[in-house]
Image 1 (cartoon, rainbow, N blue to C red):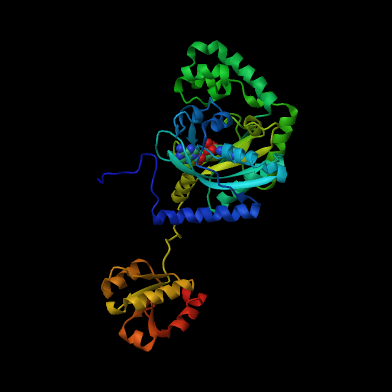
Image 2: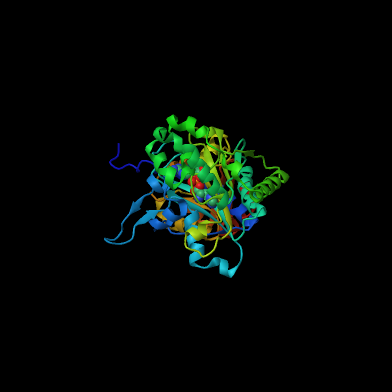
Length: 426
Ligand code: HAM
């Protein structure tokens, strides 16, 4: 085994797989443009406090999954971003984006870091594509981000994903619910585990996330947030569901859905895939009007968004056999050199072809003509361009179609012209 291995929970993506990534990313970029979302890129690290305030100190992400470090002695603590939403909101506030236009539609494809125990579909470095709609969070806005996400899945050909959706209500609804939870869990104090006891005072909603099997019975009997929603929250939720139904987007209402981040209010949703095993969440999101204020803004900023885990998305696509038609990039032309003395001439031809936008490969290791031919076939090149003494002298190169074995002698000018003809590209 080689001396150095990639860190557990981080992985390499080799060309065959990166072709798949590029394909999925291409679909995301194209659909983002259709829906009017523009790309934002934010730094990979932020001040730790941003995530503590934004995601919530009692969440698993902040409590145990952040890669946090002190870059300078006595300096402020930094954290590798575990998600994008807090950073995007921080950037929007810092630049006063909402002061320039009332609505901003942003999207990203970004690397994230969570110190979770690595397993299939769960990594310490992973990637998400997502969108954040800032400045409006009406049912139409929430439905728009969900529709964008679902259209990406549909365009990629994914089948059988489940969209689960819930309403978490407004701040006042959750305050009443919080009291109800404290009243419910209070008598079970002696049966609650240590993290849940801590959450009982600070954030009883998070007790519902508990994975501890001994707690499941108590958790199952807890009051439901949905029963504490006021008429406005219910009407808002109904409207979101109406828009989704109108568009033929199937969903399941799940009143147990709470999400693992504290910033959500009103509609929250999650998408799961049955092919993924234990880590079955492909994506999730919701509305988060209060995040801006949590980050120091003097008022709420209505907002909604989602993020989809790229690795889990690609795993699902692979399991559903959606990549069969994808092959790594193949060159149009492979230059096959007959005598090494004409290597410079051949390289000049390769340069001219590439300058004209024709993908061209050429041997750089001085290998035999036979191995060059073998390489041209291995790369699935469409043509071999044979260059030898005769060709250099006459200025006419032999173009061999590697599928039909047909050969034609052509000048460089003619070559440049016809290799652009789609007819030849098959
Ligand atoms: P999240 O549910 O924490 O939401 O993450 C979204 C998706 O990222 C998950 O459904 C999963 O596919 C993927 N993911 C999360 N952790 C890992 C991991 N360790 N390894 C592989 N994939 C993972 C958010 O991050 C919110 N910022 C979504 C959002 C955007 N809400 C509003 N706007």
